Image (spheres, rainbow, N blue to C red):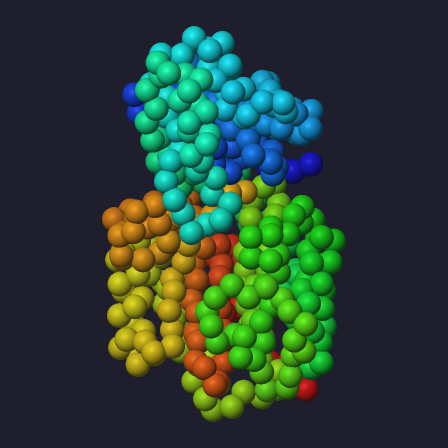
Length: 388
């Protein structure tokens, strides 16, 4: 289906090696990120992946989806559960591996990202009860480290995912006019992206985020509504597609009619900050340094009152949000001391929100290269103006 070569044996080998290096006999991964990374298939139901330091990686998923995942993924061992809790099936597989008294990693923690998938209290108690001799320790950082720097094939797939979203933006640009509802705009984009090869409109943010007028001022998630866009308004168009499990996310903006002087000020500050953020994303710098440098630039220009950012994680299904691009250390959210290296991927972001004037949002997947970076979307930062 895809023209890039994935190397599942290398990926799975790397996961198993990391589990062993962490001093674990196996990792029981419940996060969407971990399950996807290990099985290589779209896995929407509550599932777990068992990654032993030695032996085959095992996917445990609802029985109704086990045949499909066995066909579409790359794991040889896919085990379904239906009439017992998921962790009872996991424990049975751990027993078969001879690891009932082993040191087992789980994925514990919390996140603002709703689909994260950390182990629940009930699942933990089920696992603990079924394997009383096992030592359960938190191992969620293992996959965080492994997914931070992307494989070359993942970069290629994300480049195509971003191109599909760009195609959606082009369709909206051709169709946008006063009187359209935000939902209609989302529909135009969704059809174009599906025609262009998108596999999934990821639903975390309501699929396609569209906002207009006062709804652009908040800087928050903006699922499309029935509101009709009006002449003189900013229109925020934040589109999402998936290709080869990689999540394309590109936010762009439009102005319906000639911008006012106040709107021009917002546009100029926003566009300049976007350009500076890209300039700052250089190998060898830390995420904290990039955030500080960009924020200092905004303050020097007098834009601190309405410009914020500056990005979050991005990757395959479930590989979202962490780490955010900030110099503030927040457990499970940020890593300001991380040094940018080739194939590290970040969803760079800038928001400009000035109540009474308008709001803009930029999001682009960016990958660090040996000597700089590549913005994978080719949509320009400056909003386009609709002649109306």
